[in-house]
Length: 126
Image 1 (cartoon, helix red, strand yellow):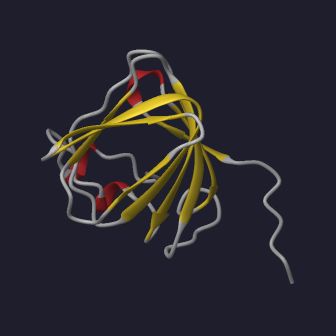
Image 2: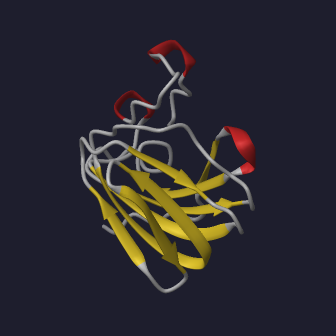
């Protein structure tokens, strides 16, 4: 039987970014994949991270900058970027953005490995 998701789980994060998770740990209990809509205000940034998942990001509005070892990739509305597990990356927005993020395996705070964060600082639903 199909599993209906009536509304996303709201995943709290600092800095004013809103995560609406439709599929994943917080919303459906899935470990294999997570699908979320991100709403990031202008000037939003997060610490660098070295996640254990691939992330497929599709920018719907605005733009997202992805800092990596070789520089910065600017991803604008109508474009996408793929980051691979084990890559050191950092996401920021200068003008704000609305985007979809798909993570394989599912996003979870225990496998994102953000700079300056230890296991006790993480939200258990992330």
